[in-house]
Image (cartoon, rainbow, N blue to C red; front, side, top):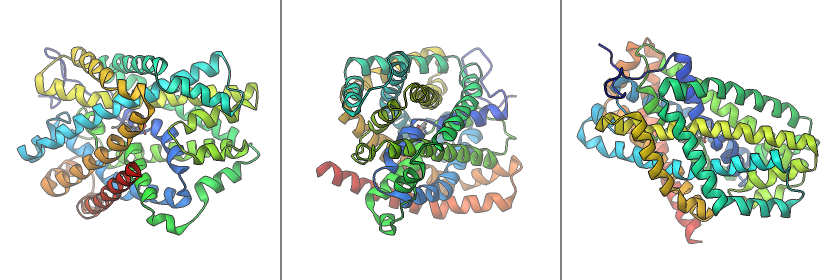
Length: 452
Ligand code: PFF
């Protein structure tokens, strides 16, 4: 008897075509606008090397064990995010399932708007070229970031995401990841080589990534940025990887797969920073970036590249194309959370569930498409606080509520105790206190920035 549970009624349940397909799809979920837009946006808010260090520590010590727990929860229950916590820990864990549904739906509602901006900037670079100066770039950004253009971009991006998810795990999500991820990596590598030839490359790295100020390690804004960036970028704590892991074979080595996802995601984040910051430094755009808004990347990058003529335009096209690919492989994982959950809970067909949810999220995203301020707040609440709370729930569920499940699943798939025990230890003793501190600091810092 097959152990896979989620699928269209009357058809065999779904699963990944291969282990590589799963790793690519999970990496596709992790690597997204968070790496390209979020990393530049948050790294530029003054934390410098302290931000980068905190971010790396959180990724390694906190997010990695939580990601393993998330994969175990999906695979061992075979259920989608709504039902998996109840299956593993009993009825009192039901709110965690709902938290995943709310977080994924909330994030996708504004993530699709950001995708729309990305697509629109790409089309503009292709068809009309780049804005000639800063004022033109700001006017262009203002015209695409809210209102009719933003709504259209949001709707089209959601529709595209819906097409992939409706096509299923193998035929849609795995197929997209198989060509999208290698292509993205290649494009980024090309851009990295190009950026290393810019005049102010070293200055860019020094100003934004390497400037060391130990006091920043205790700065609440830096701590909030590092936590948010780590959790958002890996994309753990929201059920997306859980949803993917429910379609996973019993035998695959989860810790290794989680490490690959984390390595890929961190590499792309750092590589993207190494492309964007030299551009910013080389073209004297530091002020735009330090006045940091969500528009940083969309204003600073095209402006800097414009002065390079045709080659700059080509670089812009490659950058925004790869950003769009990164975004759609993440968006499909967000949509898979409520889609697989409703299929699992109500027995609905994949197609019907997907399109109903697309409709709902299209409406929920309208306020973000009409007002950048709303989008920023949605990101702060859902991408920051709610996502990190989901990570805390996961660590508590598998570290304390159902540790036997964690041990058993990993041992059965061939992981040695020398690996599994330290992971469980981190999940019990490291992740919950660290996430709690991050959460409290984030909420306080957010409240302060909103009241100030
Ligand atoms: N990790 C994605 C990014 O960096 O853009 C965003 C994301 C995807 C967050 C999936 C959460 C998630 F479940």
